Image (cartoon, rainbow, N blue to C red; front, side):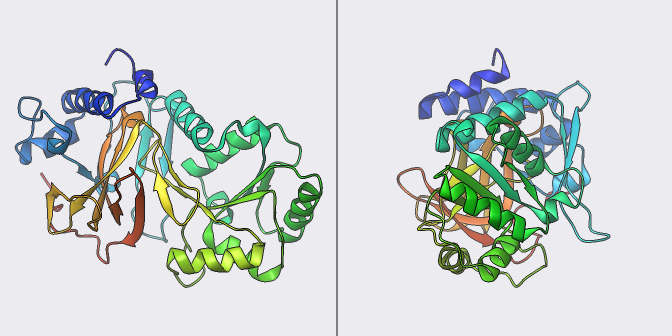
Length: 326
């Protein structure tokens, strides 16, 4: 690949596969951890000649290894949330401009120009710690929106509601992005009727409330906030791109990202559409780390390139992905 930004010009499945194979070859050569893992599976540039043969690194490696495919020094280290004493994932980002271009282009792809929105963020659990890639993204979207009402809200729900109502009166297009438990608090405390506001949940109760299935969560939020649809964002510390669901919890990826489904009993086997299994993510923006990640999430793909996220595996030691020590 001539330059990393080439991934943002992908328009066809053939181009995606071609770029994916180029990135695999690059990361096999540059990423010692990924190369060792691939070698254990008997996969290398000589025999990986299709998308289906590319090995996916278990996401747990980001907790125990420095996953990097660049000789450059990291510009920032993103870290996952975790309870006290729990080991967290670390993502060493050597080129922040790639992350910025990925999430800016991704937002524009699904929602248009961010300058048309007021961006309000209700992300208390993320704001209360350092190293959140989500906070970095939302902070940038807030700044790029150039709307004086845009900003973060910690626990000041009354002020948030006042601003939401004022924006509604102006018929201002608004995005309220929030963690699930905080949006539930908002929906239960206030009876709102938001006609010009997109509600986007980023998932996670963060131990604050009982976990709910997405359909139940969305129904509660729709009733309490007066919206017809709840949008969702699917991203993680270990990635530099996001998938979005504009309705019904069905996600789409930007052209440089793809979700594949693996057999939960055999991590090297990919499943056909409409079959449930483990989620593998290809994120070509992640060229300086690892673009091929086997997550702990469950999902299934549909014929139109869309994905339903079904939840997480009940245990972290996923069968077929336990080549953790070498």
